[in-house]
Image 1: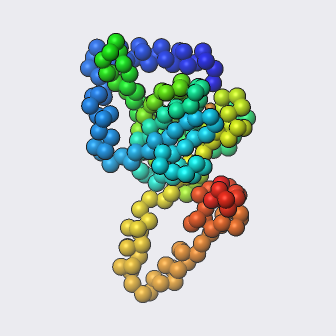
Image 2: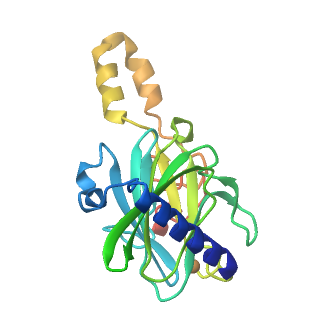
Image 3: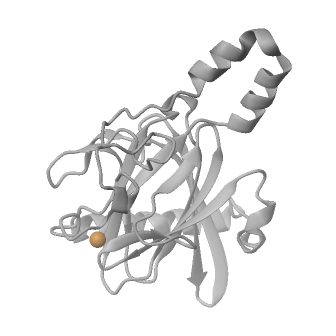
Length: 232
Ligand SMILES: [Cu+2]
C-alpha cells in the first residue's frame, strides 16, 4: 500500500532475478510466449486502469468467473497511468483489504519477465497466502494457481486499496462456479426414470441473496445486487 513497500518488493525481485539468472532461470523465457501450451490452465487477463478492473474480452463490470478446481493463469496488467494494487478476498476491512484472503491456503506461482541490460529474462516465485499484487504503470505479472474445490459457489472480490481507488469503483467480483456441471448432468441421465424427482429438486432455482435474480443468472449469488449489473 505504501511506496516504500513497492521499492523493497522491486529490490527483492531484482535480487531474485539475478539469483535465478545465475542458477538457470526458473521459467524458460520461451514459455511466456506460448500461453496456450501451459498445461490445462485457463488464461485470463485482468486489466487495471483508473479506476477499474476489467477482464480482457468482457464488458466492463462483468465478474471474473472461474471454476472450482480449475487451473488458472491470471495475467494482471496495469494499463493505467498510476500505481495500482490488487487484493483478492471477501468482506472489505476498511482500507486494509479483505478479512478473508482468497489465497490464504492457495499456492501461487508468480512469474515476471524483465529486461536485463537488453536481454529478456524471466523469474518465478512460488508462495502461499499471497496478500497483494502491486504494479507500476505498464507492469505485468502472471499468477498461476488452482482454485480450491472448497470455494465452489462462493463469490469473492478483487479490489485496489490504494487510498480512494476502491471508493472510486476499483473492484470486481470474482465468482467461483461449481466444476463440471455438464458431466454431472450426463451422469444423472444414466440413472434413468426413478431418479427423476431427485433430478427436478436439484434444478429448483435458488436465490440465496434474495435480490430477485435467480442464482443461475446472478453473477454475485451471495450479494444482493442490481439486475443492471447482473446481481452484483
Ligand atoms: Cu488502484
